[in-house]
Length: 200
Image (cartoon, rainbow, N blue to C red; front, side):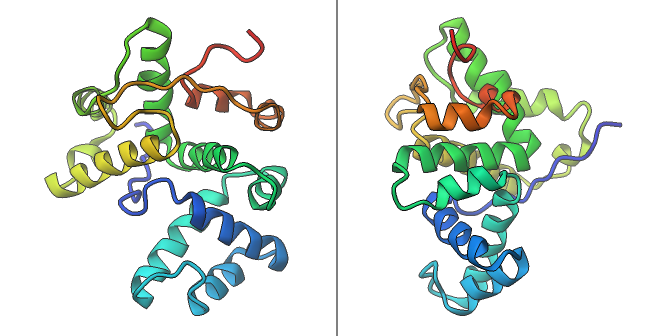
């Protein structure tokens, strides 16, 4: 049986601004659990309730743990463009959540390469149905949770500038030289974006 998918991406969309805050605290502290506690206790994410703050901080830490130290430093740097920060948070989401990464590669990127201009909820549902043949945990999801997961993936793609909200049109990715250089250490990460092979 295939390794079970992590399916806890029900909050936050891309979490780009939160990722920058948490990354900066982590780089100061050098410990994820300490960084999470500081972010939560000091409400650095500006969340209304403690419970929500814990949940969002915890989710952000999970995703950031998928990035390299160089990627984290670039994410946290004050001079890094917001578009690059969004790209790194999309990479973090795709690496941590295999289902999201496979959807990005097998649907978002494939549609771009095949000249299909959109990615829709129907495409996502078809993808999940196919994956459920090897992943019974997908069949076990409640309807409301499945809808939240789908909504959050699309929310993240909109925030990352990969899709236009009007019409779900694919926006080709033009990664900066800084992002491209970092991703070459893990070239499979280029597959998370609607683009051709790097360097082509």
